[in-house]
Image (cartoon, rainbow, N blue to C red; front, side, top):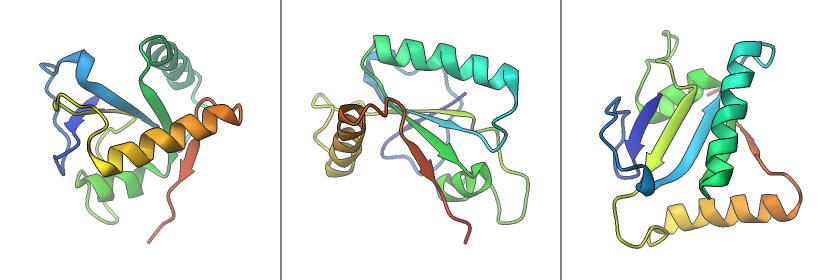
Length: 123
């Protein structure tokens, strides 16, 4: 599991983050048939829903790694199956980008899409 603050441009594997500051959970996979990973995702999704943490599914892990600075183009990406985005600010949705993500997740839930999927295109 990778933790990163919204301000960081690369992943941080630190487990010393305050869970109350988690504002977004990214679940990424290119292999929808990995049963163990899907069970893991189901448990994470249940926890996030219970704790009002927005969730986004992301396809194309290699591209996600490039965006987050965790991999080189054409190289093997780091393990980014679960990325927790934290915002240590007192006002969680003060940042305009986080506010847009929050609105997107809320609008998706209104359309009964509880875990929206974002397909990242290759470069």
